[in-house]
Amino acid sequence: MHEPGQDPYAPLTPRSLKDEFIERFESLILSGRFSPGERVPSERDLGSMFGVSRPVVHEGLRALESRGLVTIESRRGVRVNDYRREGSIEMLLSILNYSGGKLSPELFDGVLEMRLLFESETARLAAARRTEAQLAAIEDIVRRESGLDSPQPQAVTAIDYEFHLAVAIASGNQIYPLLMNSFRRIYRNILDLFYSDPGVIPTVFALHGRLSAAIAARDQELAKGAMQEILAYGERNLRRILLH
Image (cartoon, rainbow, N blue to C red; front, side, top):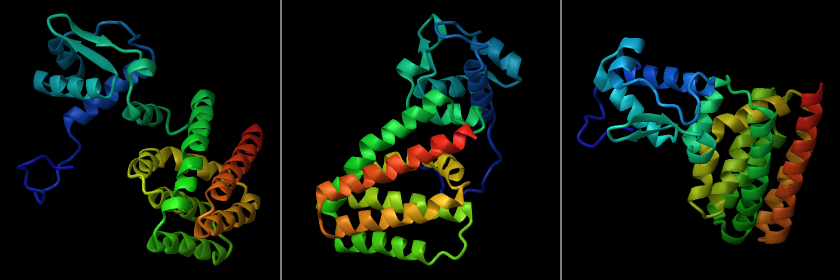
């Protein structure tokens, strides 16, 4: 996103030193080189360590503070936070970047629990609030799913994500699709793993059809139940796939 007053058509620039500093500093925290509560070297020393200027370090630390990784204390320096207590959604994305997109068992369970909590509600609200245009978008995805010929895992992942996002949009809650998009990379990593077994595809697509029909009928409880069945089926098979 460009800043106010900045020319949106200005030439693109290579990745900034600040971004490089942020990524490398995050890795020091996530690897345990800097522990929660520890104070980090001064901006001057960090600049020497990373070979960048103090303004780059300062801007990078401000960005890290906004993610909940550090706290900048006046006249006392910079303290490393316990990101579990103070981290934001951006912190989760940073963890995934550091781990190559692979979820720890704890994060894996957390994502599944989070999906069950809020996607059940998106389905219920979609049945209550969807517009005709939103219903048509959901039904179009279901039709395209049934028309996939020998679908490849990546294509199925893409259309599956599109279906869940369309349901979130149909909920009428503007926050739900933003949450979905915040977790896009996580979701797609999980879905790629899930669809490594093509045998699950027919059942998932059939369940999508049931959810679409419940939303069309404006049956809130049926829609909620259909989403819960989709997520339960996904969890059972993900755990089965992970055990192999």
